[in-house]
Length: 156
Image (cartoon, rainbow, N blue to C red; front, side, top):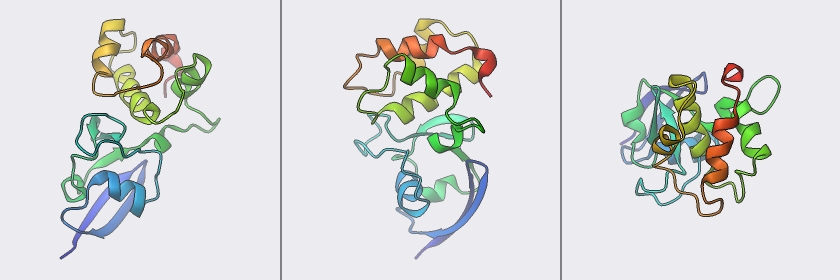
């Protein structure tokens, strides 16, 4: 039996009937067609499905869509600006922090969440904020450099 949920994703309100076992990552990807949220391990270990749920980064593979009822969610698609790429996305590109791109949405959302709370984080704070996100391509240093390079005044 499906359950009705109401949530706001990237500023847009959505109402949907979902199966009680439907994960948030599946709802976002397949029902709302927001494919920037990647589906990786499905066990909450890789961070590729990271979204911001009510102001906090979460692994959306571990959250049921019904648990998100009434919530505000931001996916990587929600970071775009009127000019295009978000400053953090630009920094990832400029610093070579994106290779295969699979981990990038989760990394960028976790980093943006940190920068909104801590405008000038230390390298250790960045590493801690990104610790739930695995990258198999870059070796992390370019990701750290990208986050550190962002002009905090440009963060919306």
